[in-house]
Length: 197
Image (cartoon, rainbow, N blue to C red; front, top):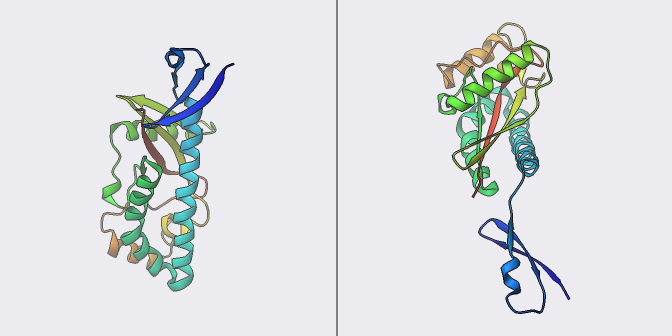
């Protein structure tokens, strides 16, 4: 009689296909996560982090307007993403070619993906999340597109972004270049790294 037992050890899933016979343990085989697993996991993490950040940002706006929201982003956004990285056992990052916070600077792979997504957008293609595997790591990339809510802080000065709010943003981020966007533009990317081990 065969027995099927799933064992989870060290982040790997093993399926034990055994019987009551001696030496049955030699049938243990690791099940390696597929690309679909990483795409699904990346999507889940992106959605979870986006929801937490959005809820906190909306709450800050309701409490004290744009000034409170900008202060929240300045102080709390990166530590929150770092803590969620630990919770999800992944390195979660948001980056762009037009940065607000210099600590979010893109690495070479992220810059390449930003350029790729920008080219796809310019040619009218739908940008879909992608995976990239290098040196035992799998990175999930997905676009960050602007909506009307984003434009309050990332819009065109004097139009969707008031001059007063733009000045306020500059007081927190003197090097800010993350403005001038319209709705539906590529604001940046999600970069979520998994250790394949």
